Length: 166
Image 1 (cartoon, rainbow, N blue to C red):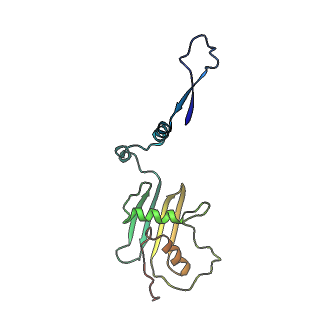
Image 2: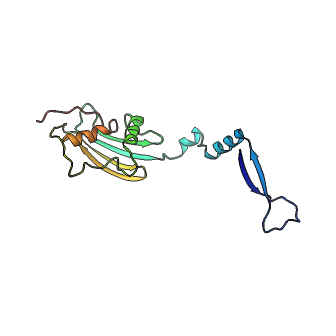
Image 3: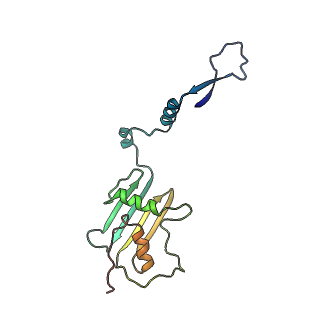
């Protein structure tokens, strides 16, 4: 049961004004849940359309990826939307890479040992805000670390097949 203490503002005038006696309101389990739900309820869909998008917003610019994937896309998460070809999948990909205390868009560390393989000429830049923090990250597929970093964020970044070095 949920117990809520409310001040008695309508009690007899003979009570001292300094501290009103509390009234106790006991709610059954169903009423408790209903009260909590009403406190945390989100606005109806009609209101949500009038509000500006909240949550995370990213701009993704892709070059030399081929297959019609090049371009600049807007991505909004929570709720998913924007001009990105797969906003829900892109938001989920970044969510999977987001860990407490780590930057999902962090570059490959300078001392990383990477395989010498070429993933093609594709590049991408991601800017905006994620998890309340500014994002300005670049991606390429110049070696094994870059390929793995890119692939971890598919479909935020388009799926690209590795290419032979020219």
